[in-house]
Length: 579
Image (cartoon, rainbow, N blue to C red; front, side):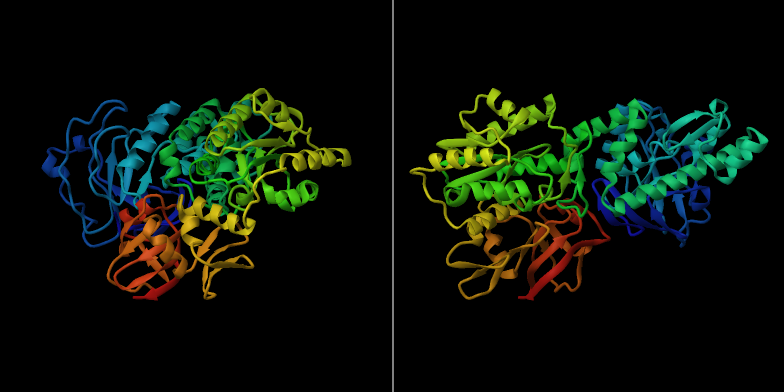
């Protein structure tokens, strides 16, 4: 916990922040020795007492001071423990990548970071250190960043880097670009036209000039990474960038296995489109989270008939040409069946959840071919879904490999062959009409949609709690019998509660932020949070509860982070009532 660092924006583990030292540093950032004072190795001093003497510039100013540290090899535990030293200004301490619980600081410097060549070491070190230090502190990883790995380091949650690696490489004739590093001597023509490369082309190899190019490339890549975080597209950029080397690709696959680390830091909703262009996209938290909620929180309406449909390029699906045709073909039978869309990479999208992120905001390369991983993921989810939600009859309007995949899995269904031609739609209409004979008529489909969306965002039972008693639908809003709004589904698929709706959900105990004895105004800052549900992620609708206030807002950080942090906006308030 620190008063010198604040996270401003998040996109997964990647974040934009501010480090309040002598000059405010916008992170992620490249820092130099001008930005801090490092006291160095403890072995440079005659005694521990001498090493721990206050730095001459640390008394009452904002110069970042990195305290003395004990050098240690990457996989060797630190044998000497230094006493804790308090400073009047910002403090940095060196932490071992794999061992020990760090003392309180504002900036943590990862020791031996330059030795993290192996992807497993890199992921293990960053995840381990991040989990051992407070979320509202900065992590500095020296001597590791290059233009090709920088975006991935930012994605991991690293806030501060330096130019040590690229400058040192210049003295060995190594030329850096975002596409990797090569020997300068291997180039017949330099791909960059910066002032340093123009000088290299005219005057030949010079270490200082080459270092200038390498540093410039690092700075340019940092600017790109920051912009990707602002646009909430850092993951898509990283999936492209890691193809530079097998080691980076392996590192991305390894970090995806650290599901808890990524999920705890990934927003519930992003403004950008989710592009699933690579095999690694199947492992994205947004995708696995959606599938898990469909299987655990969502309960299908009590229907005798299930209709399996393919996805469409246009989202939400119901606005697409193909799904409008499907709707016309099913006609009045639609009131007797439940629709489930099969798609990659989300696997299953119930019709009621088609506006929820990422179902309404994703795109994939369409080839008509389903690879083995996609098939296995789809069938695993579909099998679990059918175990939980039982149907008497199933109609599958699928074609190509998707139809064959479902058939091979042994699902007993009427297969109509898919398509949107007149004959195909006639087959669909006939199959649905026959399947729905004697089926139970479903209730109000609009209420079913609100029930499903509420359960998706607030957990099982939330929909029943919100819709209890006499309610009515008005536009995109649900109102109680007195006409007071309870909940609204926004055009981007998120849910918006009123205080009245929040009171109905409060007994469930989910997505609640408890605050102190005050009435918040504008934004709820992290220091005002007493406790928060650990399920809360940035972008979630939350219930604010305190001795003097009750209301609703939109989370700006995860619940666990609200409790840990001493700076930053925890919740953007929407409606607050004085108690």
